Image (cartoon, rainbow, N blue to C red; front, side, top):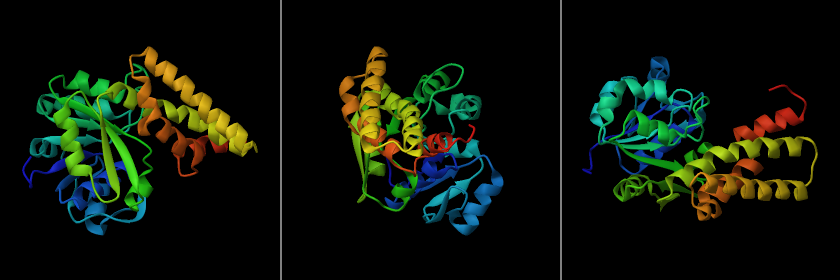
Length: 269
């Protein structure tokens, strides 16, 4: 990959913005696409994403854009940080353009009706793309604030893993590679369920024993489930499994934990 080839980040949320900043800090030009033209314009002018990452300066190397067609034409490596509910509708119309590109999903979730993981949707839309996922104990704000963080890129395509490592690896961000795309992605999606339970337990005044029991049994259950779907059990002893589960179940910064905490306090969903 040449020095100046831009990399695309699709999505204007907190994690997409944190990853765009990481790339730019490594000298990679970034096109960060978002659907809302006003958000893109505000981020271009103010060099900040106030809605999702208030107080974090947007790196000069990040260009917030609103033209998806031009973005996909210009970039060979595309990080997809779209909400799980929007991923299909945004990318399906551009399936032809995605042929042969590296598509890396940053979205931790499962499509509601189909129960498909994000990489499976990408595969369906663009069967000839090279597909990977990025997942781990990665709270967006901490990444943006340069807290020491590690993540896992998973793909059957070794070259894609190496490419992602070369553009994202930095002083405060380490990227490990895995061949178990399915296990890594399932870890990121399933732990959200348990984080809601963990938040509820804290709101209900449960102790550390309870929290530890919940996290441990959650790990056992999600591992059994993933293995039944074809994943490698060892993946769940790594960053994308137990690592992500711990941070999401024990941090008030986690949105799923916050939902559980509010439920535990008696609020409605």
